[in-house]
Length: 220
Ligand SMILES: *Cc1c(COP(=O)(O)O)cnc(C)c1O
Image 1: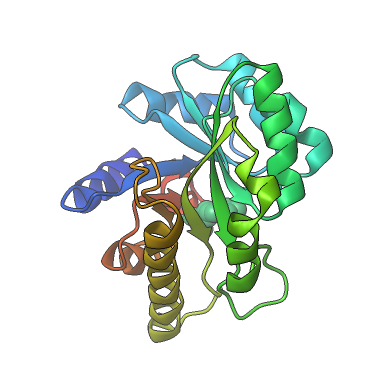
Image 2 (image 1 turned 30 degrees about the vertical axis):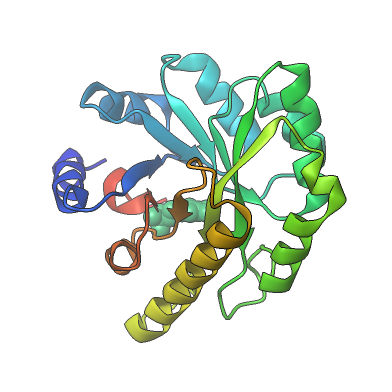
């Protein structure tokens, strides 16, 4: 844990519109509480079970963001409390989130995860799949989810130009999608890009949510 680094980071992002998602995966509840006590209210987790345990153990005004791949059969466990799901990568998953949001009498905020990296391991929709999803009849029927924007992960590489290029492509896609499908919806405004290694680049490309873990919580 590094609260000095946390304070530096908060100061660093202040001139930008971005909010910090403190990525607490694998870290104990006590560490989360220390950041909570100095003002951090949004935390990101990538595993459903871990997020549920932490939700149960920690203050109820924490906003929990699911940032990792979500399996449809696990949606029901987080539907009562999750603030935002960043990692929606199929219509099927979106339908499942909608079903459980409805059961819980709420609307769940979602981001569509877009594949921008040059790696086979990363999840996400292609540009074509995204447009197809948003144009579909099935999508238009979903009333208990709200699409708040797009999420992406850049290639895990030490090449600033390449990362910059990937983020800028996603920002362009965001602008196109905003104009075409969400021009009258003020809630479509989030661009979730940037992690410990590349958040500075993400801020330059219009990130509104940065997901930072290891530089504040320590290595996992
Ligand atoms: C783990 C993770 C992060 C944070 O990574 P750090 O390098 O620790 O900052 C961000 N986004 C996703 C999707 C992650 O799984």
